[in-house]
Amino acid sequence: MPTVDGGDQSVSFLRLGLSELEEATDRFDESAMVGGAGADSRGRVYRGSLRGMSVAVKMICPDVAVHEARFSRAVDAIARARHPHIVALVGACPEARAVVHELVSGGSLEDRLGGEAPPLPWHARCGIAYRTCSALAYLHSTAMVHGDVRPANILLEDERCSSSKLAGLGMPGLVGPPQLPSGVALAYVEPQYLTTGELTPQCDVHALGVVLLRLVTGMPVRRRRRRPPTGARPGTRWWTRVPEGGRWSAPRRLRCSG
Image (cartoon, rainbow, N blue to C red; front, top):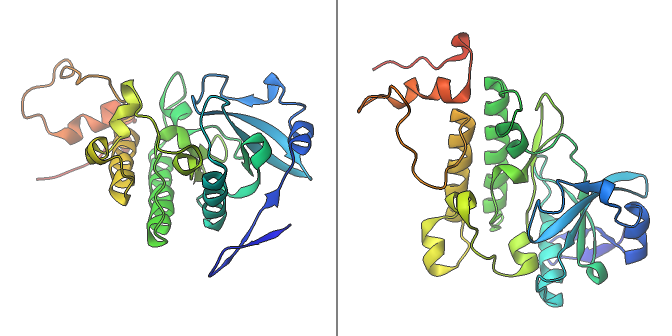
């Protein structure tokens, strides 16, 4: 594996060609696409097999502007982020505007929190929260900002959610300043960013807070402030709503005093 000089520390990742990515993904066959064509407006992700490794190939959409020097700097920064709860970079292909990561095959936290998926048990929620906080604490300790923390970028290792990893690192750096999302995704954007356009650790902390709220309540982010649930009285303590929102069984409900 080639090593790229990263200043105070070495950075290792594969420098790949387009032909190798085509072979890895069966020429970007639609059956290998993760999440469907509309999963991310900035790019598509394909499952693949590369040099004996199961990988996820992220292709940046052709209509998204990517500056070559910015791409190179962002990839080097992503490669430095080595943490057990962050999806590891395997390689990059500037020619194809693609980055290759290890494959985390259990789906995303968004998949588990939405739709008809069974509710997550309490211990799984706590584990996901801990691992995500640990990953962000590491990034911030190295002066890095994730910039896109949301349930869709928290990947699960298996159906039991015994492990999880933070994905999506470096996307704002790869494609330039991100466009403001619309609808429910706007809830993850730190208000000050709307004014300054500057990604800071506070942006990650704000988004993490929304993720934790979803983990605790099991409820979706809404476009507008929803009306109080039926039967809720003014002054109802929040912890009486949490067990119901999370669909936990009675033995798992929070017990709070005071």
